[in-house]
Length: 153
Image (cartoon, rainbow, N blue to C red; front, side, top):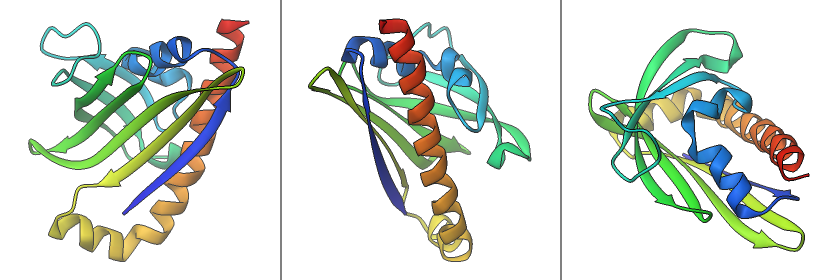
């Protein structure tokens, strides 16, 4: 009920972190989230800040809004958030930014929050959703790479 993908980006951690931690820019690189906005007066990433993302599941639908809460926000190092359903965490997404060579190793990961519901979901649809998440993480990191390297260049 979890996976991780890493991509090297020829840009400094500050450039990559700023792109990922600004959820209003998610549409530039996400495979499923085509818009996002901060909630409750938040204007940027801070632990506990909430935002909502407009998601088109699997790039085809259904389309829905999901509320998320920032769980990690350390400038140039990490950014993470949990997806909420009924106020409860159902999925956690995390990005780590590690200086490496000429730039940054960016690691994206997800972990479903253990519950009876997520265990049943994973038992029924996990194999297919796991493949989709992994492919989407690779595509997301490739898009982040293109944008960050262009911005840093």
